[in-house]
Image (tube, rainbow, N blue to C red; front, side, top):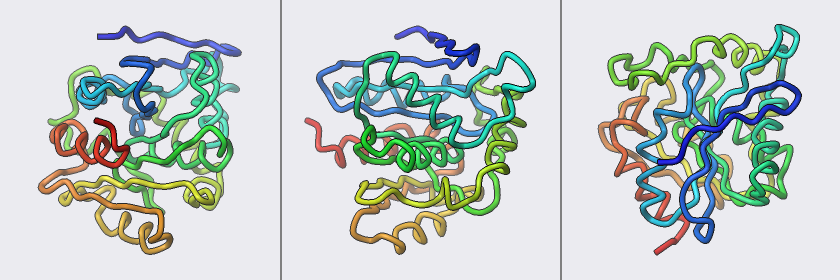
Length: 230
């Protein structure tokens, strides 16, 4: 199991884990709001077992209050900065709920770096609340409460169109739990209806908001299948 590293450009302290083979498809995974990268570990491991390169990138920990005044574009830049740091030029970029909104921002701001967008649940107009969702299912140590306010403020500071729009010509894979009340099925269906030629949706039957934790196999196989890696 790869260790968590901290990349500190300009004192931002961005945690990340880079694991798996460098010869397989590369996927960046970004956690939900107020959560760290640890809870995405089982999903990452399932994919690395299939020869994927998985890079989990967590939320920055600013060195000062001024550094915490950020937008979604700043959080997207954090992702690209880590990609640069590890020499990853191009990848599928995805995330869980709020993490998926950051991924969409990456695709809009840095389109040449993104082969596709993976959304584990689709955020709608209302902000999600991962910290209080299915609390008993959040693995121990996965909460990162101190970044929650920064992430909320970043989304408030950024017009919806700048993180919810789909980048031109970029394929999107939506995986969503049928019992998810925070990022409900209807959100993914609306996104697919807006671009049916390039948005695919896969349902995880019985999955709640934390389906990437509770339904690891059902979450990983569509990624493996869609990226067509044997």
